[in-house]
Amino acid sequence: MRVRKLAAAFANLEALFLLSLAAYLFIRTLTSEVEELDAVIAEIIFLVAGASGLFFAGRGILRGKRYGRGPIVMANLIALGVAYYMIDGGRLSWGITLGAVAIATAGLAIAAIPRQIGGSGSASL
Image: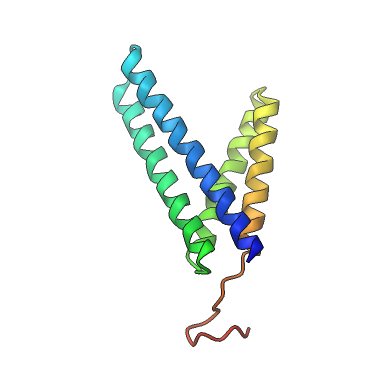
C-alpha cells in the first residue's frame, strides 16, 4: 500500500508540474509577443492532457487498479529522453533532477502491484 501511495504522489507531483508549466506558457503568451501562437496553444493543450493523464493514472494506482502503471511508466521513459537531451544541451542540473524523478516515479509505478491480478479477483499469479 505504501508503494502505491508513493507512486501516486510522484505522479500527482509530475501532473502539478505540467499544469504549472501550462499556466506559465498561457500567462507568458498573454503578456508578450508570440510569433507562433498555434504552436504555443498546441503545447499548452498537450501539457494539460498529459497532466490529466498522469493525475488519473496516479489515482488508478492509488485505488489498486492496473490501468495506472503503464501510462506512468511510458511518460517517465519519455521524461528520461528529455533529461538526456537537457544534459546533452548543457542543462546538467535540470537534466539530472528530471532523470532522477523520472526513474523514481517509473520504479514506484512498476513496484505498485495492483490488488487484483486476473479477472476472478484472486491475487494468485
